[in-house]
Image (cartoon, rainbow, N blue to C red; front, side):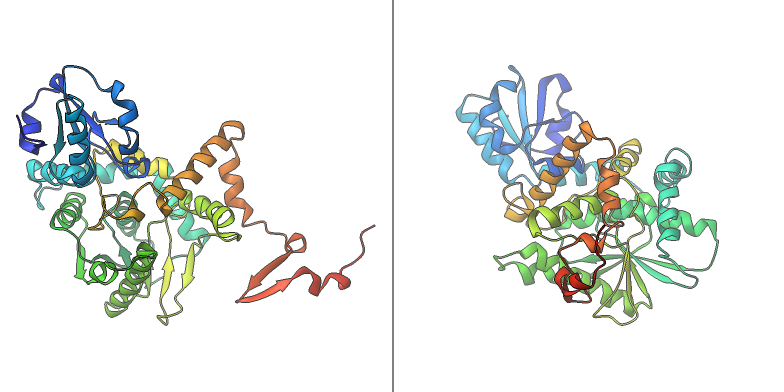
Length: 389
């Protein structure tokens, strides 16, 4: 093979002992899933870690969509390494795997296995914590109609399955709509979402928008604007469908990371709330029923069932700087993940303490705070405070 790019079909024809697969993506992307057997060497470290590449084997590189892997393969070729870029990257591999499996909507065997794993193996880690959050934070009431918002990632897909399991218990009446917004997905990304929905037996409702086109030329914080617009579109469509709540798949680790990110990068103490009233859509509420579920358990469920999901379905992934590891919000979250992991080595209770810290705020020891948009300072009532002995 003299070409720089190797197709999925050509790669599958190789014997495992003849090649080494290298994942060039950042840690955040890899944490969402990788090609089985791939070795992780971040793109920015490849030149310094060439000695780790085995001699006498073809080196197959991949990124998210095959943009940067082609550049790296060319660089390795110049160094005398037989390197190739996997056509379509991780997303292309994922789509090809799904096509090869020939998943059929009427075949429920895989879905039944996945549902069984939620009821049996992962009941304590997933469903029990899901139900606990719903009860503890009063997220669900009789006759609610909930738009379960599915982005295509592991968290939202699991949330949909947990809602289906809760519905199966039939404790009280409520309705579900599994809502997917297509803001301009590539054909591959949309196919992955649709195939996973069929595999998991989730009856999704898809609607289109042009959000990706709207933020294409935005230079400052395009991902923030995109997220805001997507939230608004979801609220609007959910309300049109008669829903009074939208459910998002944020989990426990998102909560504690958000607390620290707010302190370290935003200079404020705040948390990700388990539920919020919408300020722009009267009568609508946002709920987060995965609030108490650990990300490690979600990954374990995903890998146990051999599932593959998208990290980011943005059509600009690989070329959008805010989706990469250099100075992006994703890298800040990874910094916080590493910080928490380091602290946990000497204090096994650190994660729980971070989570509880925003439940145990003592206003008498806080310099200033905001309530309903109004800032209050401790000096306002300092002279009225009782004297200490």
